[in-house]
Amino acid sequence: MAWLWFVLLCSSLCASPVLGVVGGDPAAPPEPDAAVVFTQRHGNSARIQGFKDDARGYYTFNGIRYAEPPIGALRFQRPVRRYLAGEINATSNCLPCPQLDPKGSGGIIGSEDCLCLNIFAPKMPGDEEGCPVIFFIHGGNFKSGSIAPYGGQHFTKQDTILVTAQYRLGSLGFLSTGNRDASGNTGLFDLRAAMTWINDYIEFFGGDRSRLVVMGQGSGGRAASLMGLSKETPREGRDATGVAALSGAPLSPGVVNSDPNKHAADKDITLDMPDTQAFLEEISGRAGPRARVEGEHDSRSLPPFVSEEPSDSLKKKHQLGPMLTGVTSAETARAVFGKYAKFLSEQLGAVKDFIKKDVIGGLKTTVQEIQALNPLKNSGLQNVIPLPDYYQAVFDSTLKAIDGLAEIAEATGDALFNFPAYQSVKEWSAGASALMYSFEHVGNLSKGYHFVPGIALTRRK
Ligand SMILES: *[C@@H]1O[C@H](CO)[C@@H](O)[C@H](O)[C@H]1NC(C)=O
Ligand SMILES: *[C@@H]1O[C@H](CO)[C@@H](O)[C@H](O)[C@H]1NC(C)=O
Image 1 (cartoon, helix red, strand yellow):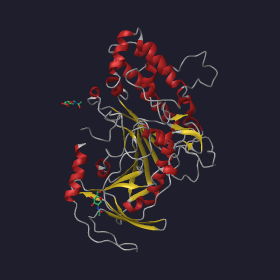
Image 2: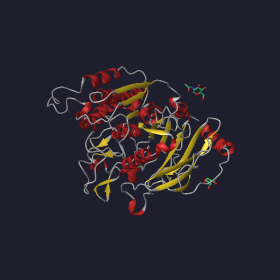
Image 3: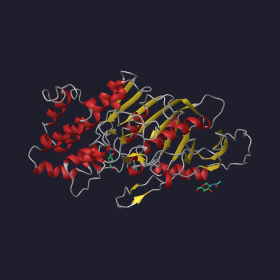
Image 4: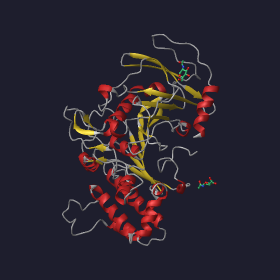
């Protein structure tokens, strides 16, 4: 992350001073080089002060609150939007949303006042056409992560604006009691509020909201997929003109929880007593918080975010536009060779046919309840014909184990990522165009980098 410090350091040292404060009327355009944006919306005007990275030539606006802090009576509720008004100092990041300390202290880091977004713009608005906009949703299995690691240099170089937004995580974002006290999916409604914010304001930052792609990685990709599936009209907060779901496709095993109560008691697995099913649940994103299917409306007749399973939405062709999805070449390798290496190696040594029985048997259970991954599920043939050929082939080839861990990485990567991505593209393309990629660069995976797997957008230390 050295580059980030460089960006911050350089911006604070090299940015040219900004002169002049503007009064109530619509302001004249600021000096070409000043990272200052004026907005007028919802009866408010605002002046937003960011900073410019002179070396890389792009403009950054950090820590803009798009919703009221979800505390007190607002906790567990859908976000209440905050409009831009007055003088806003957008030069420092917000704290992450509350989560377990990634350094493993066992404590909680972050702040509930975390509903912020960052904007990276290649230029300040002028007469020319606005830039396309990417709205990026960070990963972390809906329980960790923040926008702090993401910078804009790759996108701004392509004359594209990047917006990143934080959303409530863990039980603050996904706890569901099934009634108005905690109706669930609040983290997703946060993202929807951020999307609406982008639609309202991005033109002031030089963006073109008619070219807005929602992109996410891992659980962020799953959230982006859900944003791209809706029958709502008007589609408030679903205005993306495309979806890019990186390593987290609409039919991934962990996208929705159709029976939230069943997993209500889920907790993180402890490394003292891991078991194979818990390992599979975790790497598939099925453990812990995730979106719930809300049905037509909650008890207050508010429109849902997730009215049905993604596979049903796809069948009804509710996809809103084109989708890009894809996988990295070893999605689960970081967990297999890192956090779980010791446990899995012990099992390989101690349990006869561990891969065949425990891993593959477990994978079958893990993917079984996902309808679209199992075309035979509702056909009545389930008991007569085994799992689809594809899985059988994956599972058979895995039996020629040479290196147990590598085989586990391959089988789990295929079953939990590659095949769901393939199937997602197939089903999505029935209603809108869909593209698939495979990111093949293999880094130093066995060292267990402290980052979500498959990330192609950030740099390593
Ligand atoms: C904006 O915030 C930063 C960081 O908190 C601070 O250093 C700076 O002085 C503030 N600028 C203004 C104009 O208040
Ligand atoms: C892995 O790390 C070593 C040392 O840190 C480095 O020399 C090597 O280039 C890295 N390999 C890859 C594929 O990133």
